[in-house]
Amino acid sequence: MTSDQRPDGDRTEQTHAGPAPSRVVVCRDCCCGTSKVPGVDHARQVADLAEQVPVRVSDCLDVCEHANVIVVQPSAAARATGARPVWLGLVNDPDATEDVARWVRAGGPGVAPCPDILDLYVFTPPRRAR
Image (tube, rainbow, N blue to C red; front, side, top):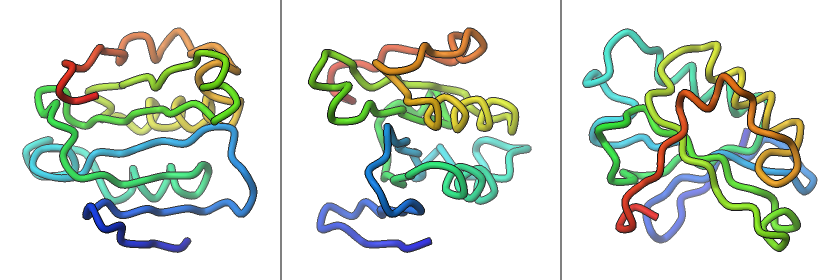
């Protein structure tokens, strides 16, 4: 896995060499990924995702009440056809993390339908967070 620091402070982690159908952004800052969300192996969550799909680790996404937050971003091709990022909150369970990875491997937003179980995690962020 490689990791690059971007000028805006975000850390980018990529595990795949070719173009990915989709990727995930994992919030890790003041609430997400910290002891404020107990009982979760936060480092393992990112590692599990990064072993399977492209991952970008972000600073605070400003939706702390939904910690841990994962945003599933569509591929450029899917976005061109109207697909939009899907925001998932309270992703604090290894099974949910695996469901996210499985969806991204299948193509993600605009390509593969969101698994019904992930509907429980979907939320609409306030405009300032988008």
